[in-house]
Image (tube, rainbow, N blue to C red):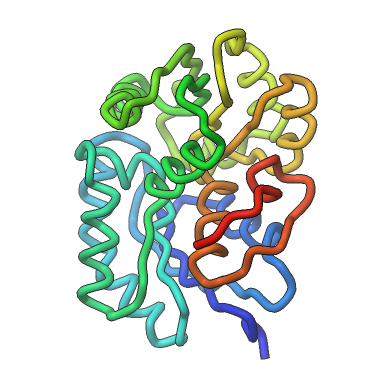
Length: 240
């Protein structure tokens, strides 16, 4: 049986082509990923808010697969309405389905706290209006954004077509001299092959939307084994 250790129910934007493959790549043996989708074409504030209306139905479909947790797999979609938006999404899904739920923005905050990182160098593929929402969200939680660089891509499928090397080059263009960590945002921005190399080259922890979300998801379902190659975060011994 697939998922004999845990079944992850993942909700992603319909145009996301990256989070599922990266989740499968990181998944420990015995953990399976089951996905539902919400309509999104472009990463704009308006579309992110509209997309959220489909989350409840997506969660209902995942519940029929007997998943152990429901993950709202969108970074800016879980923070676009400001501080607490991530928690509100998870709470609504939990009330509706009776299954524990988390959102990507929550995972990012917990990952940064675990790494004791307060000064963040931020790399994103987003347009300016979305970058501003993310910056405001993080700063409201007490983080300082010491530098921000963005590709300014609107269509989500175009974000998913970026090679991982684009994320590497973008992150290397950041001023990290005052940063405690680098955060590469967006669950549809391919990053997995470059994270380990980037950490070595920069000498500070690197997290991405997908690594943070998988890390917290595994903790929530009680799987804490070290996973190599995807950054320091996975090798910190934490309790739930």
